[in-house]
Image (cartoon, rainbow, N blue to C red):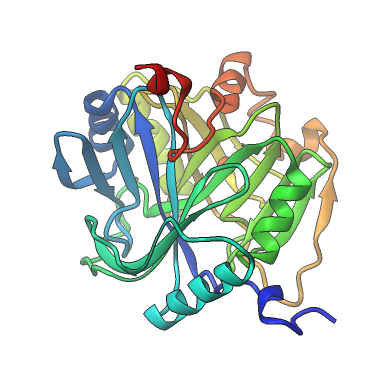
Length: 315
Ligand SMILES: [Fe+2]
């Protein structure tokens, strides 16, 4: 029977994807892009980082950090209480995973009580509770509410899914053949998806638009900035969400999306989607992704933010 032993249980109940940290060698250009074009709002900046919010309730949804090369900094999930953070730390230790920070107050912009640890491919995961409240903005603008999912390239999709379901308690919503797995932590069809790839890296980060009308108006605003989608607009089969993909100044892929399928827990039955054009592109508007956007989605090998690169060893 599962759940007989404490170390068999997920470490916490994740409520939502809060924010993503991206490393960028083009901090000024990236911050300008996300603030002036993409529709986020800077909440704080220093010489080496910028924090930006959407119209939703998170203090920040994107944290840009200056780095030598692009990559994924951290993925932050919401947990309900500090007590759950402390319990998560105990359950991590029972599994032989030592947090790299916490449990304790997070000395960072946006505050919170949390912990951080790395997954088997070196990604930095943060769980936090009691982050700073901000006033929600109106949802009328054609700008993102927040980050709604991130897709991660993995060299072992079965191991990644096993870790994120058993340790983090995410549930599999659907598979796209044995190529992608879509995982949820709340009613949204997916907050994390894994893509089987040649190396671990960030595939893309998706920002929620309040409706398909806001989504299209957002594309219109980008068009006035001279930016057209590198793939899209379209609607995916798995998740039923709309999509349009772009590349930021660091070469990282960002997506506008809306209307992701809402899952009724215990009623949902996961499916395996075949990777055919009619299922990948329900509207028939997007066609296949271009070689350029596929290259950006593959990214560069990313051993994780805590891994020292060979160049840094010899420097
Ligand atoms: Fe996506």
